[in-house]
Image: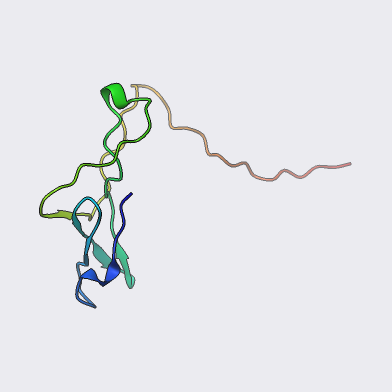
Length: 94
């Protein structure tokens, strides 16, 4: 599990830096909140790990920028996006 301590960087820093269990990450301040995007929480599910339980992410050296999400997962050509998981209420009579 990745955990962070928001007290790790200087108060008011434009780029908050926090230690996690796997390494240090650098985020951004947006609207008064420290935002960290794309921080890995597990190893990628490839090969033998495809349908297995998640494996903890390997630790890294240095500071990892967490400014943007990673790329979306691949899809088959011609496949459409999944429909929304919600439906609008419908008026009924009777």
